[in-house]
Amino acid sequence: VTLNNNNSSITTLTNNGNITGSAGTDSGFGIRLSSSATITNLTNDGIISGSAVNDEGYGMRLVNSTITTLSNDDTISGTAVNDDGSGIRLENSTITTLSNDDTISGTAVTGSDGQGIYVLTGSTMTNLTNDGTISGTAGTNFGGGLLISNNSTLGTLTNRGTISGTATT
Image (cartoon, rainbow, N blue to C red; front, side, top):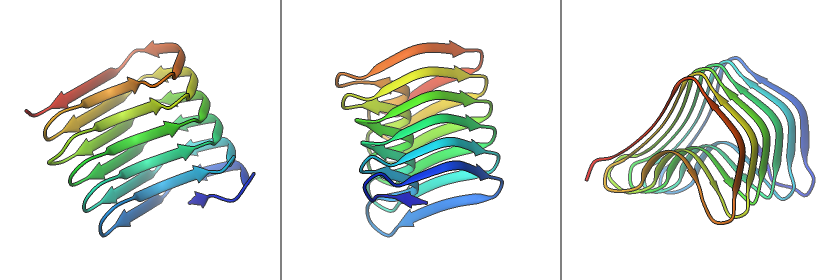
């Protein structure tokens, strides 16, 4: 699912199956929003995944975009064989409420930057409630469950599950 024209929007997206994207080299996305795209309500009861043979495998990537409510009851995952695998990545974007009851994961198999949730470049996540697992794994360095960086904000975090990061070397 890609929304990349100015002000594209989806009011309600419910996934009970598989939303997947794969790249033979770089940039595989399950869901990608950019250029002021919005999703008001997204409910995932299936699999949202993105993979790349080299870099940038993202389950969900938001650039200059907004999701008001995201409820995950199954799996959101991003895998890159080399660098930059994230379950959810926000760049200059907003998620108002994210509830995770199952799995959000990011993996950089042989390289760096495997992040479960990566909030960067002036992004905002207002409320994050985790009753499941948020994990990031990197083959070298920078494996993080939840990373907030570059003038970004997380308002309220409620964790009753597991948030973990692993860097192999």
